[in-house]
Image (cartoon, rainbow, N blue to C red; front, top):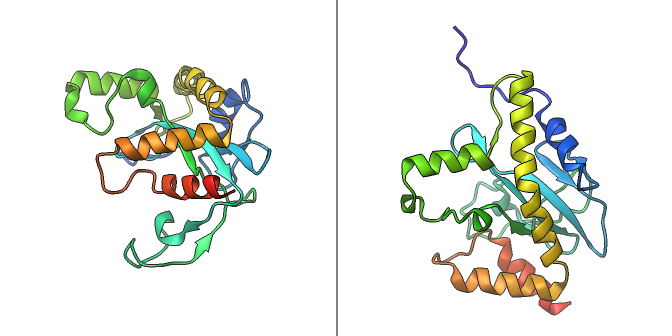
Length: 201
């Protein structure tokens, strides 16, 4: 009996078809990202974020053409994370990333940083409602489930992109995220980069 988990066939295009109901995006050829055209040095990007298990949340945000990432933050540098590595930019259709991120958790009242705040049942129900099931087959039932979950997230994306448009909006959100972070390093790490670059422009 074959028990190997496999990605749902044509997953990226299934998600893209739903996103296109509200966003003018195309699929990143390396998978699991969807991006818009450039507008004033940034583009909208949506992705599914891999976590443990078979259900992945949708993240969204802006990709800037002037923000570099250190290769070690991209998982491609064997050196320890705090050693200097090569800087790379995400400016093409083959190089896409999110520099400033939004996610569904604040909209749902779910404390992702403190999973013990919810019961197992609440945690499970949250994931089933708002996380995309990425493994399985392409049965009509599974395809419709994926579409339903993506559509459930779209109002959050629309609100986020409507509220956060200008450099001032971005700096304000980043300052809040950094100040409220309980960790030594605010996640995503690019928060510091975006804030510095936006303020210096």
